[in-house]
Length: 448
Image (cartoon, rainbow, N blue to C red; front, side):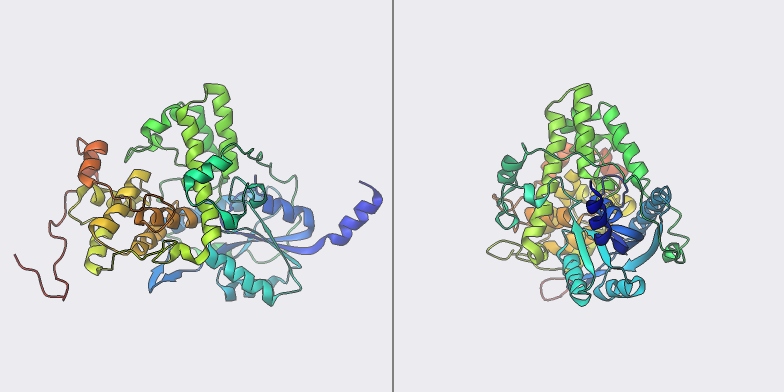
């Protein structure tokens, strides 16, 4: 680089940058943070808290377990930034007014954030960017394996099914994860008030996992150091058991680890212990996640529409009593009850369990699929906007499934995945009311 290049770079440097963390709560392999570090003389780091969204009057607000895990992840991020002389200086409401207030408070010359698959979040940021035309807004892709420019198609032409998508992308080279920045610009001193946003009760964690980047790294390294990946395809459908599935989603959801880092460690595992159908299946599952990220970008607000991306509306409705029974695990289906009770107690449910409870809600209970998706959005520790809503559309027959409805035979599924009834007994799934409805279609009581 010449002296003229140095001068040009200084001319382009922003006096003050605002680094907005959202679902990228990590220092390593965070291209957004790397971009901010190279562009700015000083940097303010904040966390953007998603506002409580409303879905047809149904408030989608994280449970206490979710908030506890978030506190752990933010605390870990704050410690990670501390190694570079930085820290989280504020937590901001992710509403349009909350974001505008954040910019008015700090008055940065540039704002940095990772690209989001959630169309509501994107719309709010676009609105704020229009209100602050003198501020540079920089969005960087950090939530996917590939950047949109690397895809062999335009996002608007996303393949209509996962199989078509997989065939086009599975041989693409995945970029190596990037290291943490060598240094970060110094902060602007402000009161460290962000911890006040969490009550003392929420700081006492009862969550399934330890949140944060260091915990994510330990878990991933431990998993791939074992031989669990060698039999993943055979164990992944188990309803319970820590090592039966990877559990990567518990850290991927908030971005404590990147999908690229997981792929990097998967490839290292294959060089050490060998590649087989099971190790490929881990990659296969990450490609499913990838597909739903771009699916959310492609379809925008249709991802939470009753009709989805289908040409006809589902033949379902909403029955408050049935929905409440489903939420509490009090349906006539013990396997579904056990899964729902596990979710309510721990914030987690296996992939197979999620398929079964979704099928039950849509087909056995004839309920609007969006309410099931909204309940999962509240309760899952590993809630990911794109994966959650995309998968629910898939199961409800209004999404990317070329076969249409995916209806599971719950009795057969129970015999296959819980033949001895241990999972149902553990979560007391058989303790339920045999009757599903107490009133008929015109609200008359149903008697024996």
